[in-house]
Length: 308
Image 1 (tube, rainbow, N blue to C red):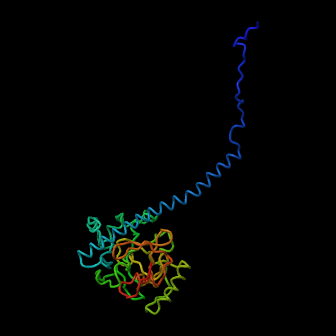
Image 2: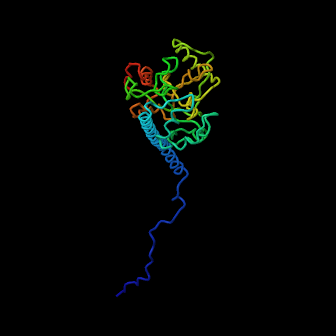
Image 3: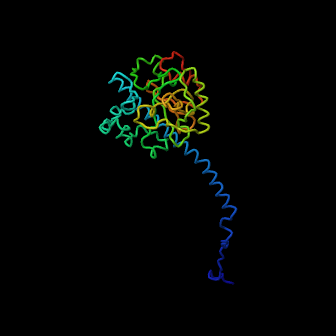
């Protein structure tokens, strides 16, 4: 009788397939993978940028609300809205005690050239979307509403030069009248006030001034100033007008800055933040109806501001 073979005579063969170089990525597979990653990054990057800008705009809105509270507190104490003054300073300097920065006033010297404060700009006056603040430490992201502009009705806004005004005198309503907006930085050509070739003096010449302003900006003529040029200066550095659209062009009236056009602007895509006299902030698109925009800038026109 034959005996069963001993297990040691069996040869165990491996069923694993031998390794080969073909199991790695091919060049085509690698290129496809990199292309997919590139597409995903291209889709993701704008979304991340948009999210960051939304956060910056929200912070900017919050800062403007705090400025609004400070203006109301100032008006309650001094019985007038803070104003820009040829001497000694801007409305942003006036409200320093209301934003808990009163100690800066000990450094302030009106002459010469409003010394002592330029490099000490409070963080509250810095819009986080503004890339020019580090290079220009004396400028401001926020400017006060002068109104339609000098050639329209003179000072008919809420932040004027030497004109004491209370909230009770804003007959068009606090919720539909502007007090503060934004100023785009010097890295944008629209921040500059280009010089018109002649000086316009009569309100009937407003459209002529606007036409000359657009031509001067298109040709990039000599600029005599910058909207939001300094946060302490009380002549035009902290003012804007509702003459033209947000993010539109600006110009001096020949040699005169104060009677020129000072359009607000911002680095927020599509428009500017606007602080209304009742303390709330709205985002205003650059393409707002000009009639509505001018109505928002006028404190006592009696014209309806419309929907904005």
